[in-house]
Length: 337
Image 1 (cartoon, rainbow, N blue to C red):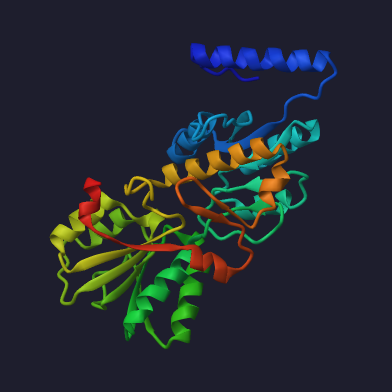
Image 2: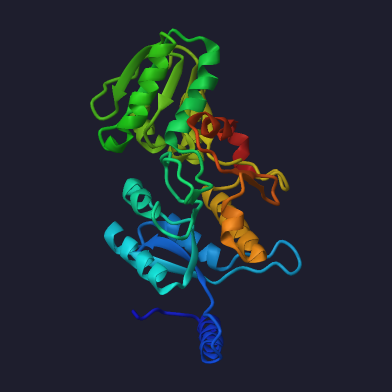
């Protein structure tokens, strides 16, 4: 295997695990099955790297709680990732896959995962995945988030809506087409703005922002608003510090953010990051699977309520995913929480 730099504690834990596994094999006992995780090998993807680290060190939330061994597999490309998973499945050493990072190659993963004898729980993806019994607890994707934002925004009965786009996000075309169809059905005029070539933004009172907020900040640097604006945007494009700077320059703008998970921890009242939410859900699923001894018992449930009060759903239809999205108005005072 490739060389890895491990701390003394990690080396000791690995040695102990290998010794126990060898003893079981010598005694004729079946080897311990592992949970698989997929993480890009490049260090530029900080979110999946840190998610893998957190899932390897899940904290116990109650006495006696235990977690199955997790094998985080790093991959250079989708083909390598799929080959590594299928090798483990062939060995009979994998029980299920938790929080695999498949952003950008979702359909390749789904096409293969449908035929695997083990389930995938909580796949990490910004898009809505097609329903399949082998893929469970996928959080609402961009299309669901945009749908929920439009549901909220259209209660204001606007005549027109500005959609802010970027040439650098061609993968959002399905989401953009979905938004167009929704607005057309409500007879709302759509003013689409390609950020790279626009000299100014239309002065509509409602915006749908489908670009990272720091890119929009550059365009708004010399802008002046003639009306109060409500900006709707999915959480993956939102940056609270940038939002605060824009608000100082343009006090007439407010933010409605769509989250695929509850952004406030019900126990502490604090805002949590995507990393906090994904790791909480992943650790909870692993603990539940370890307790049941059969991952299928967990993956087959229609919903699971976590200790924080967050409920994970198995939702096969678009309407249900859309209803799961949490919309919160951002206040700069949230930075202090």
